[in-house]
Image 1 (cartoon, rainbow, N blue to C red):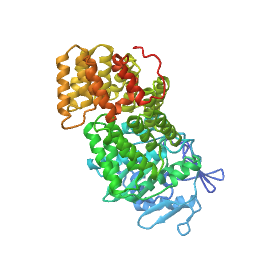
Image 2 (image 1 turned 135 degrees about the vertical axis):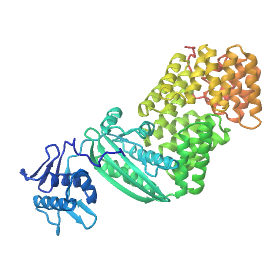
Image 3 (image 1 turned 180 degrees about the vertical axis):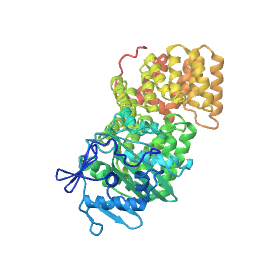
Length: 588
Protein backbone atom coordinates (compact mmCIF):
# COMPACT_ATOMS: atom_id res chain seq x y z
CA UNK A 1 0.00 0.00 0.00
CA UNK A 2 1.49 3.35 -0.98
CA UNK A 3 2.11 5.63 1.96
CA UNK A 4 0.23 8.89 1.78
CA UNK A 5 -2.11 7.77 -1.02
CA UNK A 6 -5.80 8.21 -0.14
CA UNK A 7 -7.84 5.14 -0.83
CA UNK A 8 -9.55 5.66 -4.16
CA UNK A 9 -8.07 8.90 -5.54
CA UNK A 10 -10.51 9.80 -8.32
CA UNK A 11 -8.63 12.90 -9.49
CA UNK A 12 -7.58 11.27 -12.79
CA UNK A 13 -10.63 9.08 -13.33
CA UNK A 14 -12.16 8.94 -16.81
CA UNK A 15 -15.31 6.88 -16.32
CA UNK A 16 -18.92 7.73 -15.65
CA UNK A 17 -20.54 6.01 -12.69
CA UNK A 18 -24.26 5.24 -13.06
CA UNK A 19 -26.69 4.34 -10.28
CA UNK A 20 -30.44 4.34 -10.71
CA UNK A 21 -31.43 7.40 -12.74
CA UNK A 22 -28.23 9.23 -11.77
CA UNK A 23 -24.82 9.64 -13.43
CA UNK A 24 -21.64 11.05 -11.93
CA UNK A 25 -19.12 12.30 -14.50
CA UNK A 26 -15.79 11.77 -12.76
CA UNK A 27 -13.83 14.15 -14.98
CA UNK A 28 -16.25 17.07 -14.91
CA UNK A 29 -17.39 16.48 -11.35
CA UNK A 30 -21.02 16.76 -12.46
CA UNK A 31 -24.05 14.88 -11.20
CA UNK A 32 -26.91 14.36 -13.66
CA UNK A 33 -30.38 12.85 -13.36
CA UNK A 34 -31.89 11.39 -16.51
CA UNK A 35 -29.47 13.56 -18.50
CA UNK A 36 -30.19 16.80 -16.65
CA UNK A 37 -27.47 18.39 -14.54
CA UNK A 38 -28.12 18.72 -10.79
CA UNK A 39 -26.61 21.60 -8.86
CA UNK A 40 -24.55 20.18 -5.98
CA UNK A 41 -22.06 22.01 -3.79
CA UNK A 42 -18.46 20.83 -3.48
CA UNK A 43 -18.63 19.11 -0.06
CA UNK A 44 -21.64 16.88 -0.82
CA UNK A 45 -20.14 16.09 -4.24
CA UNK A 46 -16.86 15.02 -2.60
CA UNK A 47 -18.73 12.84 -0.11
CA UNK A 48 -20.55 11.13 -3.00
CA UNK A 49 -17.29 10.44 -4.80
CA UNK A 50 -15.72 8.99 -1.64
CA UNK A 51 -18.72 6.75 -0.97
CA UNK A 52 -18.72 5.54 -4.58
CA UNK A 53 -15.05 4.51 -4.40
CA UNK A 54 -15.95 1.47 -2.30
CA UNK A 55 -19.69 0.83 -2.40
CA UNK A 56 -20.86 -1.14 0.60
CA UNK A 57 -17.93 -0.02 2.75
CA UNK A 58 -18.66 2.01 5.86
CA UNK A 59 -16.75 5.30 5.59
CA UNK A 60 -16.15 6.72 9.08
CA UNK A 61 -17.02 10.37 9.72
CA UNK A 62 -13.39 10.92 10.74
CA UNK A 63 -12.22 9.84 7.28
CA UNK A 64 -14.65 12.24 5.59
CA UNK A 65 -13.42 15.00 7.86
CA UNK A 66 -9.76 14.42 7.02
CA UNK A 67 -10.32 14.16 3.28
CA UNK A 68 -12.74 17.02 2.75
CA UNK A 69 -11.68 19.67 5.27
CA UNK A 70 -7.98 20.52 5.63
CA UNK A 71 -6.54 20.28 9.14
CA UNK A 72 -6.03 24.05 9.30
CA UNK A 73 -9.68 24.84 8.45
CA UNK A 74 -11.66 26.18 11.39
CA UNK A 75 -15.13 24.69 11.03
CA UNK A 76 -17.61 22.69 13.05
CA UNK A 77 -16.92 19.34 11.40
CA UNK A 78 -19.99 17.56 12.75
CA UNK A 79 -22.22 20.36 11.55
CA UNK A 80 -20.42 20.47 8.20
CA UNK A 81 -20.75 16.73 7.58
CA UNK A 82 -24.39 16.68 8.64
CA UNK A 83 -25.25 19.54 6.29
CA UNK A 84 -23.30 17.99 3.39
CA UNK A 85 -25.04 14.63 3.85
CA UNK A 86 -28.42 16.38 4.03
CA UNK A 87 -27.79 18.27 0.76
CA UNK A 88 -26.53 15.11 -0.93
CA UNK A 89 -29.68 13.23 0.06
CA UNK A 90 -31.83 16.07 -1.24
CA UNK A 91 -30.05 15.91 -4.61
CA UNK A 92 -30.59 12.17 -4.78
CA UNK A 93 -34.20 12.34 -3.54
CA UNK A 94 -33.05 10.06 -0.73
CA UNK A 95 -33.99 9.88 2.96
CA UNK A 96 -32.20 8.74 6.09
CA UNK A 97 -35.23 6.69 7.16
CA UNK A 98 -35.62 4.67 3.94
CA UNK A 99 -32.35 5.15 2.07
CA UNK A 100 -31.87 3.99 -1.50
CA UNK A 101 -28.31 5.25 -1.88
CA UNK A 102 -26.72 6.72 1.27
CA UNK A 103 -27.16 4.79 4.51
CA UNK A 104 -26.30 6.20 7.94
CA UNK A 105 -24.76 3.89 10.53
CA UNK A 106 -25.11 5.67 13.88
CA UNK A 107 -21.80 6.50 15.58
CA UNK A 108 -19.93 4.81 12.72
CA UNK A 109 -20.33 6.62 9.41
CA UNK A 110 -21.99 6.27 6.02
CA UNK A 111 -22.01 3.85 3.12
CA UNK A 112 -23.33 3.74 -0.43
CA UNK A 113 -25.92 0.94 -0.84
CA UNK A 114 -27.20 1.56 -4.37
CA UNK A 115 -26.41 -0.64 -7.37
CA UNK A 116 -23.59 0.82 -9.43
CA UNK A 117 -23.31 0.48 -13.20
CA UNK A 118 -19.78 1.36 -14.18
CA UNK A 119 -18.10 0.59 -17.48
CA UNK A 120 -15.10 -1.56 -16.54
CA UNK A 121 -11.96 -1.19 -18.63
CA UNK A 122 -10.83 -4.22 -20.60
CA UNK A 123 -8.26 -6.11 -18.58
CA UNK A 124 -5.93 -8.65 -20.15
CA UNK A 125 -2.98 -8.35 -17.80
CA UNK A 126 -2.40 -7.86 -14.08
CA UNK A 127 0.43 -7.43 -11.62
CA UNK A 128 0.09 -8.35 -7.95
CA UNK A 129 2.47 -6.14 -6.01
CA UNK A 130 4.00 -7.57 -2.81
CA UNK A 131 1.48 -7.35 0.01
CA UNK A 132 2.63 -5.04 2.78
CA UNK A 133 3.34 -6.61 6.16
CA UNK A 134 1.50 -4.34 8.60
CA UNK A 135 2.89 -6.11 11.65
CA UNK A 136 6.31 -4.50 10.99
CA UNK A 137 7.81 -7.73 12.33
CA UNK A 138 10.64 -8.76 9.95
CA UNK A 139 10.06 -12.38 10.95
CA UNK A 140 6.62 -12.17 9.30
CA UNK A 141 7.92 -10.99 5.90
CA UNK A 142 7.93 -14.57 4.63
CA UNK A 143 4.20 -14.73 5.43
CA UNK A 144 3.30 -11.63 3.41
CA UNK A 145 5.51 -12.76 0.54
CA UNK A 146 3.97 -16.23 0.62
CA UNK A 147 0.43 -14.84 0.42
CA UNK A 148 1.51 -12.65 -2.50
CA UNK A 149 2.86 -15.70 -4.33
CA UNK A 150 -0.30 -17.69 -3.57
CA UNK A 151 -2.53 -14.95 -4.97
CA UNK A 152 -0.39 -14.73 -8.11
CA UNK A 153 -0.63 -18.50 -8.53
CA UNK A 154 -4.41 -18.44 -8.18
CA UNK A 155 -4.85 -15.60 -10.68
CA UNK A 156 -2.45 -17.28 -13.11
CA UNK A 157 -4.96 -20.12 -13.44
CA UNK A 158 -7.17 -17.75 -15.46
CA UNK A 159 -6.10 -18.40 -19.05
CA UNK A 160 -7.52 -15.14 -20.43
CA UNK A 161 -5.35 -13.11 -18.07
CA UNK A 162 -1.59 -12.53 -18.19
CA UNK A 163 -0.32 -12.28 -14.63
CA UNK A 164 3.15 -10.93 -13.90
CA UNK A 165 5.32 -13.57 -12.27
CA UNK A 166 6.25 -13.62 -8.60
CA UNK A 167 9.93 -13.05 -9.40
CA UNK A 168 9.19 -9.87 -11.32
CA UNK A 169 6.56 -8.62 -8.88
CA UNK A 170 8.87 -9.03 -5.88
CA UNK A 171 11.27 -6.54 -7.45
CA UNK A 172 8.76 -3.87 -6.42
CA UNK A 173 8.73 -4.82 -2.76
CA UNK A 174 8.87 -1.62 -0.74
CA UNK A 175 8.96 0.55 -3.88
CA UNK A 176 6.66 3.50 -3.16
CA UNK A 177 6.29 4.66 -6.74
CA UNK A 178 3.30 5.87 -8.78
CA UNK A 179 1.26 2.91 -9.95
CA UNK A 180 0.87 4.14 -13.54
CA UNK A 181 4.67 4.23 -13.76
CA UNK A 182 4.98 0.66 -12.47
CA UNK A 183 2.21 -0.45 -14.81
CA UNK A 184 4.04 1.02 -17.82
CA UNK A 185 7.20 -0.85 -16.87
CA UNK A 186 5.31 -4.13 -16.50
CA UNK A 187 2.98 -3.44 -19.44
CA UNK A 188 -0.16 -4.37 -17.49
CA UNK A 189 -3.73 -3.10 -17.47
CA UNK A 190 -4.31 -3.43 -13.76
CA UNK A 191 -2.53 -3.72 -10.44
CA UNK A 192 -3.54 -5.47 -7.25
CA UNK A 193 -2.03 -4.17 -4.03
CA UNK A 194 -2.85 -4.67 -0.40
CA UNK A 195 -1.83 -5.40 3.15
CA UNK A 196 -1.52 -8.35 5.52
CA UNK A 197 -1.89 -8.25 9.28
CA UNK A 198 -1.46 -11.45 11.25
CA UNK A 199 -2.35 -11.96 14.88
CA UNK A 200 -1.81 -15.50 16.11
CA UNK A 201 -3.84 -17.75 13.84
CA UNK A 202 -6.04 -14.91 12.55
CA UNK A 203 -5.13 -13.08 9.36
CA UNK A 204 -6.58 -9.87 7.96
CA UNK A 205 -5.97 -9.22 4.27
CA UNK A 206 -7.02 -6.05 2.48
CA UNK A 207 -6.73 -6.00 -1.31
CA UNK A 208 -7.67 -3.48 -3.96
CA UNK A 209 -7.74 -3.51 -7.74
CA UNK A 210 -6.55 -0.42 -9.56
CA UNK A 211 -6.85 0.47 -13.21
CA UNK A 212 -3.23 1.09 -14.05
CA UNK A 213 -3.55 3.86 -16.62
CA UNK A 214 -5.76 6.14 -14.57
CA UNK A 215 -4.79 5.04 -11.04
CA UNK A 216 -8.50 4.54 -10.35
CA UNK A 217 -9.63 2.11 -7.67
CA UNK A 218 -12.17 -0.33 -9.10
CA UNK A 219 -12.60 -2.79 -6.28
CA UNK A 220 -11.51 -3.24 -2.70
CA UNK A 221 -12.27 -5.76 -0.01
CA UNK A 222 -11.01 -6.86 3.37
CA UNK A 223 -11.02 -10.44 4.60
CA UNK A 224 -10.42 -11.81 8.06
CA UNK A 225 -9.80 -15.53 8.26
CA UNK A 226 -8.20 -18.28 10.27
CA UNK A 227 -4.93 -19.65 8.94
CA UNK A 228 -6.69 -22.92 8.13
CA UNK A 229 -8.90 -21.05 5.62
CA UNK A 230 -6.06 -19.51 3.62
CA UNK A 231 -6.35 -21.90 0.65
CA UNK A 232 -10.00 -20.98 0.21
CA UNK A 233 -9.20 -17.29 0.55
CA UNK A 234 -6.67 -17.33 -2.31
CA UNK A 235 -9.32 -18.60 -4.70
CA UNK A 236 -12.00 -16.31 -3.29
CA UNK A 237 -9.94 -13.19 -3.97
CA UNK A 238 -9.01 -14.43 -7.46
CA UNK A 239 -12.68 -15.06 -8.30
CA UNK A 240 -13.67 -11.61 -7.04
CA UNK A 241 -11.03 -9.92 -9.20
CA UNK A 242 -11.97 -11.97 -12.26
CA UNK A 243 -15.61 -10.99 -11.78
CA UNK A 244 -14.76 -7.32 -11.36
CA UNK A 245 -12.76 -7.15 -14.60
CA UNK A 246 -15.37 -9.21 -16.42
CA UNK A 247 -13.11 -12.13 -17.32
CA UNK A 248 -15.04 -15.25 -18.29
CA UNK A 249 -13.73 -18.33 -16.54
CA UNK A 250 -13.66 -21.68 -18.33
CA UNK A 251 -15.40 -24.62 -16.63
CA UNK A 252 -12.01 -25.98 -15.58
CA UNK A 253 -10.96 -22.61 -14.13
CA UNK A 254 -14.24 -22.35 -12.26
CA UNK A 255 -13.59 -25.79 -10.81
CA UNK A 256 -10.00 -24.92 -9.86
CA UNK A 257 -10.95 -21.63 -8.22
CA UNK A 258 -14.10 -23.09 -6.69
CA UNK A 259 -12.35 -25.96 -4.95
CA UNK A 260 -11.90 -25.26 -1.27
CA UNK A 261 -10.41 -27.06 1.66
CA UNK A 262 -8.95 -26.22 5.03
CA UNK A 263 -5.30 -26.68 5.87
CA UNK A 264 -3.51 -27.28 9.14
CA UNK A 265 -2.33 -23.81 10.30
CA UNK A 266 1.13 -25.02 11.31
CA UNK A 267 1.42 -26.95 8.06
CA UNK A 268 0.48 -23.89 6.04
CA UNK A 269 2.98 -21.72 7.87
CA UNK A 270 5.73 -24.31 7.36
CA UNK A 271 4.87 -24.42 3.64
CA UNK A 272 5.26 -20.63 3.31
CA UNK A 273 8.64 -20.79 5.07
CA UNK A 274 9.68 -23.61 2.74
CA UNK A 275 8.86 -21.53 -0.35
CA UNK A 276 10.68 -18.56 1.16
CA UNK A 277 13.90 -20.59 1.46
CA UNK A 278 13.41 -22.45 -1.85
CA UNK A 279 13.51 -19.16 -3.74
CA UNK A 280 17.03 -18.39 -2.46
CA UNK A 281 18.72 -21.51 -3.94
CA UNK A 282 21.83 -21.58 -1.69
CA UNK A 283 22.96 -24.80 0.09
CA UNK A 284 21.92 -23.53 3.52
CA UNK A 285 18.58 -22.18 2.31
CA UNK A 286 17.73 -25.31 0.34
CA UNK A 287 18.35 -27.44 3.43
CA UNK A 288 16.11 -25.18 5.52
CA UNK A 289 13.43 -25.24 2.85
CA UNK A 290 13.44 -29.04 2.76
CA UNK A 291 13.03 -29.18 6.54
CA UNK A 292 10.03 -26.82 6.43
CA UNK A 293 8.33 -28.69 3.58
CA UNK A 294 8.81 -31.93 5.50
CA UNK A 295 7.20 -30.30 8.54
CA UNK A 296 4.30 -29.17 6.35
CA UNK A 297 3.50 -32.68 5.06
CA UNK A 298 3.85 -34.13 8.54
CA UNK A 299 1.40 -31.56 9.94
CA UNK A 300 -1.05 -32.01 7.05
CA UNK A 301 -0.62 -35.25 5.04
CA UNK A 302 -3.41 -34.14 2.66
CA UNK A 303 -1.76 -30.85 1.66
CA UNK A 304 -0.89 -31.31 -2.03
CA UNK A 305 1.09 -28.07 -2.40
CA UNK A 306 3.39 -29.05 0.47
CA UNK A 307 4.31 -32.31 -1.27
CA UNK A 308 4.89 -30.38 -4.51
CA UNK A 309 7.15 -28.00 -2.60
CA UNK A 310 9.06 -30.92 -1.12
CA UNK A 311 9.44 -32.36 -4.63
CA UNK A 312 10.73 -29.03 -5.96
CA UNK A 313 13.34 -28.56 -3.29
CA UNK A 314 14.47 -32.20 -3.14
CA UNK A 315 14.90 -32.20 -6.93
CA UNK A 316 17.02 -29.06 -6.78
CA UNK A 317 19.05 -30.44 -3.86
CA UNK A 318 19.81 -33.52 -5.94
CA UNK A 319 20.79 -31.45 -9.00
CA UNK A 320 23.15 -29.19 -7.06
CA UNK A 321 24.63 -32.08 -5.14
CA UNK A 322 23.34 -30.78 -1.81
CA UNK A 323 21.83 -34.24 -1.25
CA UNK A 324 22.49 -37.78 -2.47
CA UNK A 325 20.48 -39.08 -5.46
CA UNK A 326 18.17 -41.02 -3.16
CA UNK A 327 17.52 -38.07 -0.85
CA UNK A 328 17.43 -35.68 -3.80
CA UNK A 329 15.69 -36.62 -7.03
CA UNK A 330 14.55 -40.01 -5.71
CA UNK A 331 12.73 -38.31 -2.86
CA UNK A 332 11.42 -35.65 -5.27
CA UNK A 333 9.83 -38.29 -7.48
CA UNK A 334 7.98 -39.88 -4.56
CA UNK A 335 6.81 -36.49 -3.20
CA UNK A 336 5.57 -35.33 -6.63
CA UNK A 337 3.55 -38.51 -7.09
CA UNK A 338 2.05 -38.13 -3.63
CA UNK A 339 1.05 -34.56 -4.47
CA UNK A 340 -0.60 -35.74 -7.70
CA UNK A 341 -2.58 -38.37 -5.82
CA UNK A 342 -4.19 -35.55 -3.86
CA UNK A 343 -4.50 -32.91 -6.60
CA UNK A 344 -3.18 -32.62 -10.15
CA UNK A 345 -1.21 -29.40 -10.61
CA UNK A 346 1.32 -28.07 -13.10
CA UNK A 347 3.85 -27.68 -10.28
CA UNK A 348 3.72 -31.33 -9.28
CA UNK A 349 3.79 -32.53 -12.91
CA UNK A 350 6.85 -30.41 -13.64
CA UNK A 351 8.61 -31.61 -10.48
CA UNK A 352 7.90 -35.21 -11.43
CA UNK A 353 9.35 -34.60 -14.89
CA UNK A 354 12.49 -33.07 -13.38
CA UNK A 355 12.94 -35.96 -10.96
CA UNK A 356 12.37 -38.69 -13.56
CA UNK A 357 14.80 -36.99 -15.91
CA UNK A 358 17.58 -36.82 -13.32
CA UNK A 359 16.95 -40.05 -11.42
CA UNK A 360 15.58 -42.52 -13.97
CA UNK A 361 17.08 -40.80 -17.06
CA UNK A 362 13.81 -41.54 -18.83
CA UNK A 363 13.58 -38.46 -21.02
CA UNK A 364 10.50 -39.42 -23.01
CA UNK A 365 8.43 -40.01 -19.87
CA UNK A 366 9.78 -36.76 -18.42
CA UNK A 367 8.77 -34.97 -21.62
CA UNK A 368 5.19 -36.23 -21.22
CA UNK A 369 5.09 -34.85 -17.68
CA UNK A 370 6.24 -31.42 -18.83
CA UNK A 371 3.70 -31.34 -21.65
CA UNK A 372 0.95 -32.22 -19.20
CA UNK A 373 2.15 -29.39 -16.95
CA UNK A 374 1.69 -26.98 -19.87
CA UNK A 375 -1.88 -28.21 -20.35
CA UNK A 376 -2.59 -27.44 -16.69
CA UNK A 377 -0.82 -24.07 -16.69
CA UNK A 378 0.82 -22.89 -19.92
CA UNK A 379 2.34 -19.90 -18.11
CA UNK A 380 4.24 -21.90 -15.48
CA UNK A 381 7.73 -20.67 -16.33
CA UNK A 382 9.60 -23.29 -14.29
CA UNK A 383 8.02 -26.07 -16.35
CA UNK A 384 9.30 -24.45 -19.55
CA UNK A 385 12.73 -23.98 -17.94
CA UNK A 386 13.00 -27.61 -16.89
CA UNK A 387 11.63 -28.91 -20.18
CA UNK A 388 14.40 -26.91 -21.83
CA UNK A 389 16.89 -28.96 -19.81
CA UNK A 390 15.22 -32.18 -20.93
CA UNK A 391 15.42 -31.20 -24.60
CA UNK A 392 19.02 -30.06 -24.26
CA UNK A 393 20.08 -33.35 -22.67
CA UNK A 394 18.63 -35.11 -25.72
CA UNK A 395 20.51 -32.78 -28.07
CA UNK A 396 17.36 -31.02 -29.33
CA UNK A 397 18.91 -27.60 -28.82
CA UNK A 398 16.70 -25.50 -31.10
CA UNK A 399 13.67 -26.67 -29.13
CA UNK A 400 15.57 -26.30 -25.87
CA UNK A 401 16.47 -22.67 -26.52
CA UNK A 402 12.91 -21.90 -27.59
CA UNK A 403 11.61 -23.21 -24.25
CA UNK A 404 14.14 -21.19 -22.26
CA UNK A 405 13.40 -18.03 -24.20
CA UNK A 406 9.70 -18.55 -23.56
CA UNK A 407 10.39 -19.09 -19.85
CA UNK A 408 12.37 -15.83 -19.80
CA UNK A 409 9.48 -14.02 -21.50
CA UNK A 410 7.23 -15.27 -18.72
CA UNK A 411 9.71 -14.36 -15.97
CA UNK A 412 12.24 -11.90 -17.43
CA UNK A 413 13.79 -11.10 -14.06
CA UNK A 414 14.18 -14.69 -12.86
CA UNK A 415 17.83 -15.19 -12.04
CA UNK A 416 17.67 -18.98 -12.12
CA UNK A 417 15.83 -19.17 -15.46
CA UNK A 418 18.28 -16.75 -17.07
CA UNK A 419 21.12 -18.86 -15.66
CA UNK A 420 19.56 -22.06 -16.99
CA UNK A 421 19.62 -20.56 -20.47
CA UNK A 422 23.33 -19.80 -20.07
CA UNK A 423 23.95 -23.37 -18.86
CA UNK A 424 22.26 -24.87 -21.92
CA UNK A 425 24.22 -22.56 -24.21
CA UNK A 426 27.32 -23.99 -22.53
CA UNK A 427 26.05 -27.53 -23.06
CA UNK A 428 25.64 -26.70 -26.78
CA UNK A 429 29.25 -25.43 -26.82
CA UNK A 430 28.23 -21.86 -27.51
CA UNK A 431 30.81 -20.41 -25.16
CA UNK A 432 30.56 -16.75 -26.18
CA UNK A 433 26.76 -16.72 -25.96
CA UNK A 434 26.91 -18.47 -22.58
CA UNK A 435 29.32 -15.82 -21.29
CA UNK A 436 27.11 -13.02 -22.60
CA UNK A 437 23.99 -14.54 -21.03
CA UNK A 438 25.75 -14.93 -17.66
CA UNK A 439 26.86 -11.31 -17.76
CA UNK A 440 23.27 -10.21 -18.46
CA UNK A 441 22.08 -12.25 -15.51
CA UNK A 442 24.73 -10.83 -13.21
CA UNK A 443 23.59 -7.33 -14.16
CA UNK A 444 20.36 -8.24 -12.36
CA UNK A 445 22.24 -9.53 -9.30
CA UNK A 446 26.04 -9.49 -9.26
CA UNK A 447 26.13 -11.92 -6.32
CA UNK A 448 23.98 -14.69 -7.81
CA UNK A 449 26.19 -17.75 -7.37
CA UNK A 450 24.76 -20.09 -10.05
CA UNK A 451 25.36 -17.43 -12.73
CA UNK A 452 28.93 -16.93 -11.48
CA UNK A 453 29.46 -20.70 -11.64
CA UNK A 454 28.29 -21.01 -15.28
CA UNK A 455 30.38 -17.97 -16.21
CA UNK A 456 33.49 -19.56 -14.70
CA UNK A 457 32.69 -22.83 -16.45
CA UNK A 458 32.29 -21.02 -19.79
CA UNK A 459 35.62 -19.19 -19.33
CA UNK A 460 37.25 -22.57 -18.68
CA UNK A 461 35.72 -24.15 -21.79
CA UNK A 462 36.64 -21.17 -23.97
CA UNK A 463 40.30 -21.62 -23.04
CA UNK A 464 40.77 -18.74 -20.59
CA UNK A 465 41.19 -20.79 -17.40
CA UNK A 466 42.93 -18.07 -15.39
CA UNK A 467 39.77 -15.93 -15.61
CA UNK A 468 37.79 -19.01 -14.57
CA UNK A 469 40.12 -19.70 -11.65
CA UNK A 470 39.91 -16.13 -10.32
CA UNK A 471 36.10 -16.22 -10.43
CA UNK A 472 35.72 -19.75 -9.05
CA UNK A 473 38.14 -19.15 -6.17
CA UNK A 474 35.93 -16.28 -4.97
CA UNK A 475 32.82 -18.37 -5.50
CA UNK A 476 34.15 -21.32 -3.49
CA UNK A 477 34.99 -18.96 -0.63
CA UNK A 478 31.64 -17.14 -0.77
CA UNK A 479 29.68 -20.42 -0.80
CA UNK A 480 31.56 -21.89 2.14
CA UNK A 481 33.29 -24.47 -0.04
CA UNK A 482 30.26 -25.83 -1.95
CA UNK A 483 31.28 -29.02 -3.77
CA UNK A 484 29.59 -28.00 -7.04
CA UNK A 485 31.90 -24.99 -7.30
CA UNK A 486 34.99 -26.67 -5.89
CA UNK A 487 34.92 -29.36 -8.60
CA UNK A 488 34.77 -26.63 -11.29
CA UNK A 489 37.78 -24.97 -9.71
CA UNK A 490 39.67 -28.28 -9.85
CA UNK A 491 38.80 -28.62 -13.54
CA UNK A 492 39.99 -25.07 -14.26
CA UNK A 493 43.30 -25.75 -12.48
CA UNK A 494 43.82 -28.78 -14.74
CA UNK A 495 42.95 -26.75 -17.85
CA UNK A 496 45.57 -24.18 -16.83
CA UNK A 497 48.18 -26.92 -16.39
CA UNK A 498 48.22 -26.40 -12.62
CA UNK A 499 48.04 -30.14 -11.91
CA UNK A 500 49.25 -29.98 -8.31
CA UNK A 501 46.45 -27.61 -7.38
CA UNK A 502 43.93 -29.75 -9.25
CA UNK A 503 45.05 -32.80 -7.26
CA UNK A 504 44.82 -30.81 -4.05
CA UNK A 505 41.17 -30.16 -4.90
CA UNK A 506 40.70 -33.90 -5.45
CA UNK A 507 42.08 -34.59 -1.99
CA UNK A 508 39.76 -31.95 -0.51
CA UNK A 509 36.80 -33.60 -2.20
CA UNK A 510 37.81 -37.06 -1.00
CA UNK A 511 38.14 -35.73 2.54
CA UNK A 512 34.75 -34.04 2.30
CA UNK A 513 33.14 -37.27 1.07
CA UNK A 514 33.82 -38.81 4.48
CA UNK A 515 31.31 -36.37 6.00
CA UNK A 516 28.96 -35.44 3.17
CA UNK A 517 27.88 -36.28 -0.35
CA UNK A 518 30.21 -35.65 -3.30
CA UNK A 519 28.72 -36.37 -6.72
CA UNK A 520 30.84 -39.00 -8.45
CA UNK A 521 30.11 -37.43 -11.83
CA UNK A 522 31.93 -34.25 -10.81
CA UNK A 523 34.98 -36.20 -9.65
CA UNK A 524 35.12 -37.66 -13.17
CA UNK A 525 35.32 -34.09 -14.51
CA UNK A 526 38.63 -33.40 -12.77
CA UNK A 527 40.24 -36.74 -13.63
CA UNK A 528 39.24 -36.40 -17.29
CA UNK A 529 40.94 -33.02 -17.47
CA UNK A 530 44.02 -34.48 -15.75
CA UNK A 531 44.05 -37.04 -18.61
CA UNK A 532 43.56 -39.92 -16.17
CA UNK A 533 40.95 -41.76 -18.24
CA UNK A 534 40.82 -44.97 -16.23
CA UNK A 535 40.16 -43.03 -13.04
CA UNK A 536 37.59 -40.89 -14.83
CA UNK A 537 35.70 -43.98 -16.01
CA UNK A 538 35.88 -45.46 -12.53
CA UNK A 539 34.07 -42.40 -11.19
CA UNK A 540 31.60 -42.43 -14.10
CA UNK A 541 30.72 -46.04 -13.30
CA UNK A 542 30.14 -45.01 -9.71
CA UNK A 543 27.99 -42.11 -10.93
CA UNK A 544 25.92 -44.55 -12.98
CA UNK A 545 25.50 -46.91 -10.03
CA UNK A 546 24.51 -44.17 -7.55
CA UNK A 547 22.22 -42.48 -10.12
CA UNK A 548 24.07 -39.14 -10.10
CA UNK A 549 21.69 -36.45 -11.35
CA UNK A 550 24.24 -35.08 -13.79
CA UNK A 551 24.45 -38.35 -15.69
CA UNK A 552 21.35 -36.98 -17.46
CA UNK A 553 23.63 -34.56 -19.35
CA UNK A 554 26.33 -37.17 -20.02
CA UNK A 555 25.68 -37.65 -23.74
CA UNK A 556 26.08 -33.94 -24.53
CA UNK A 557 28.60 -32.89 -21.85
CA UNK A 558 31.52 -30.98 -23.49
CA UNK A 559 33.95 -31.90 -20.75
CA UNK A 560 33.82 -35.57 -21.71
CA UNK A 561 34.61 -35.06 -25.40
CA UNK A 562 38.03 -36.67 -24.96
CA UNK A 563 36.34 -39.87 -23.76
CA UNK A 564 33.86 -40.30 -26.59
CA UNK A 565 36.03 -42.57 -28.74
CA UNK A 566 36.53 -44.99 -25.84
CA UNK A 567 34.24 -48.10 -25.97
CA UNK A 568 33.49 -47.58 -22.27
CA UNK A 569 31.83 -44.25 -23.09
CA UNK A 570 29.55 -45.86 -25.67
CA UNK A 571 28.76 -48.71 -23.29
CA UNK A 572 27.56 -46.24 -20.65
CA UNK A 573 25.37 -44.47 -23.20
CA UNK A 574 23.86 -47.78 -24.26
CA UNK A 575 23.02 -48.72 -20.68
CA UNK A 576 21.45 -45.30 -20.06
CA UNK A 577 19.15 -45.92 -23.05
CA UNK A 578 19.15 -42.40 -24.49
CA UNK A 579 16.15 -42.00 -26.83
CA UNK A 580 17.68 -40.17 -29.81
CA UNK A 581 20.87 -40.02 -31.82
CA UNK A 582 22.74 -36.76 -31.50
CA UNK A 583 24.27 -35.03 -34.52
CA UNK A 584 27.64 -33.35 -34.67
CA UNK A 585 29.17 -31.94 -31.52
CA UNK A 586 31.54 -29.44 -33.07
CA UNK A 587 33.04 -27.00 -30.57
CA UNK A 588 31.94 -23.42 -31.18
